Amino acid sequence: MKISKVIFITVGCICLALGTVGIILPILPTVPFFMATAFCFAKSSERLHSWFVSSNMYKKHLQSFVEKRGMLMKTKFTILTTVTLLMGFGFVMMSRVPVARVILAVVWVCHVVYFVFGVKTIREEE
Image (tube, rainbow, N blue to C red; front, top):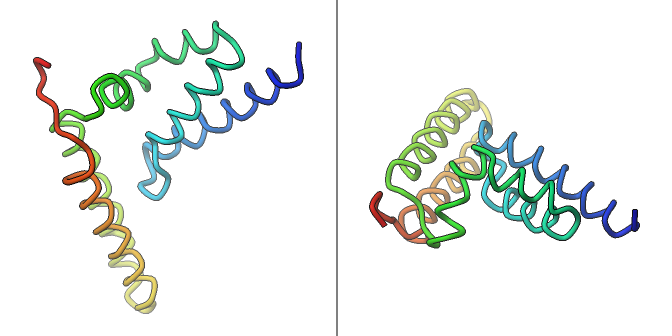
């Protein structure tokens, strides 16, 4: 096996793990890590790439974004709701750290602006 394939497989697996953690933690972005995973697996192994593209994680979080450059309203709403709840919890818990609260609020606003204005909303039938 070529060293480049090993490197792409390793980086792809790391990106897959980080993207999976990003589903739960709003601080880690899921889509960029899954895009990197798809790229690395495509460069290293057709079998890994086929597996990833057929997985539910890919279909749920990345397929519409890759194919149509947008997300369903339901997906955007789910992401923003999760981000808001988790960051809201963090905001409440950081009552004694005002700088952290400001940073968290800025990150939350950036999430909202990105998903509302930066990601195209697609319809189910498209």
